[in-house]
Image (cartoon, rainbow, N blue to C red; front, side):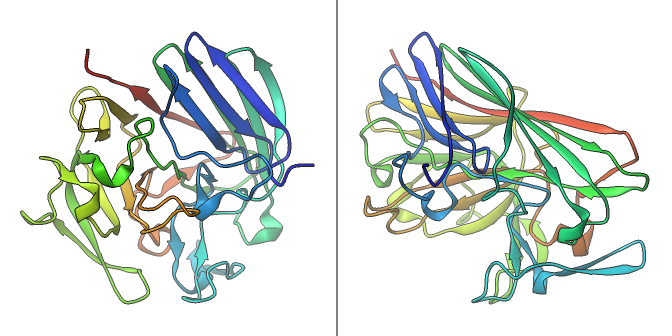
Length: 299
């Protein structure tokens, strides 16, 4: 058995993706024979969260504690160096394949209140490929009898084929930035300065970021573009419910050198304590939204 369970291949034209049973994550994506995300071996654990689905919250919860409707909840500390709970419950748990076709798969999982959540959530994630890329659709349903908080993020590292990410330019449709303290918990949100503004594009080699930005996409929903020097590009887009994006540029990802994660998120870090863009699901309500990765290569 692979560490990420069954490997599910999806194909449409020149697009090929691999989705994993454990974590319901994205292990690989190629369009026109070029990698569009940092992949990893089937026998490996996802490096630095590569491809994971982060639910029912992305990023960090300060001190692994939060309050909901007057009750305090305590979570498992999964980031011991800082004392936080990070990236939700489901990234290392097996999901269930609920339906599949040659070009799509739907995986489901349950959030158990016993883990420290105010109520149960049913989570369904559908990956669908087409000749230009991948669309990921998440549906979160409150299956309990009280209001439940919900949030979600994803953790793709973008690539443009064999071009080292350090040599590429990252453009980010974001106009605000989240300031954090020395353990990466938000202290405020403000407009980006000229030095922080990535809307005009910056070379990845010049970036050192583990930073949350407020999304400000245009009508096409594009949040980030990673462009190689030859003009070929990989695009990450999202629905309007994805209001935040984390950019992470580790110096070395699994021995490959500099990488760049562009992480779509529905809320900023520590939203369970701040309430910022935290979704509240009434009993029986389903919340559905999508994001995706596409090739936009120059002719």
